Image (cartoon, rainbow, N blue to C red; front, side, top):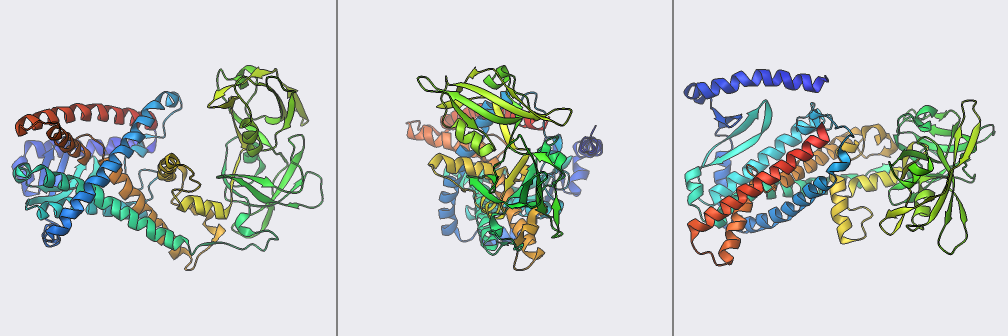
Length: 540
């Protein structure tokens, strides 16, 4: 049992008696401003209500803001549903892969490995406060009393809350109700936009550091990730190393390397031909500024994994062996032998193939005696991956994932990097939001030494603070757009159905409320089941 699970069990044991006491002694608990709210406890205060009153008096502004809020909420509603449906479709592929751990399911800085304690606490506090302030200000702008504000507590702090007077809220027309429900979502969105704009402004002053090389320092290949048990892992080259040179084992001097890029993929490029039939030594530098050398290693396109029941599986290809050649025979054409020396050359080759082509693969590996041997596998027929052929393997450059300082900065600070189609803008933005799962915030601490900053570490503190403000605010905005109770999106969805029924000719208000409430409850149940299925698949 891991530490996170033990901590959660201890917190549950502590929390249950508190909840029972609040439930059994409501009057005594109320004196301490504690109220039972389902399985949670509300800690009620009056903090911020005077500020809401003062800001909410500009009613004309908040009327316009309410219209904008509903538009933003609708946009994020479709974004959230797209993410959820995509996750459900991909759910079967998650089975058997193992989860990332229950600690990732809770947005608790320090407990969740993804959320840093200092940046996470500050950004989460700001995100929750501005969200609830949005609800409160819009409530006062529409003459709805705010009874209390406070913290929602259940085993761990679950969030802040703002409590408009329920009776007054129910009596409001549909338009101000939806303005109030959508206010928190839009305020979080605006804070996220402002934060990322300021972050990008600061990042524009960050430049790749100079290491006195004969090539452009911004294009030095850098090690971003290393696969466990790979030749790269065994070579002794650490993650965050900048590669300066390469030589064949036994050579006297190193050859200069540069980075060949394709989108976000990078490979080593030099004036020597890389072949998995040879071994090589890499020269690299670290934060200490000294030059280091790797152990001898094969270089080339390393097979990371082989998909079950794929052409590669039928041909007998094995992980941790190197691709050497792939011979392709198309209908009515001669066989073409292609040498593969990197992930880029493998992907470029596969892009030229078609379903039904015959592929024969030769692999290279080091035997127990230290001799590099080649094996030519049986020919197989490629299946389909869209319009191109599918072999069924994933490949890396000897277990390395390379990037460059300039490419790393550009892709880590631009949610729309390398976008070419309208759909790619959506995909790239969603991929950008997954950055913290990949150690990005937006630049991992281990490689900040690749860059020169105008104010040293202070610049990185500001950049990372703004990044976490952006990330937690946009995440809170998107998640609250989920069309399920108790999220804001559940109430907005009900209001939207009510509006649609009115446009379709349902004039009876009570009947509309009944139908919209029934539809919203049904959708809410389905969406929550989908949400928890996806959550369980990823954390367990």
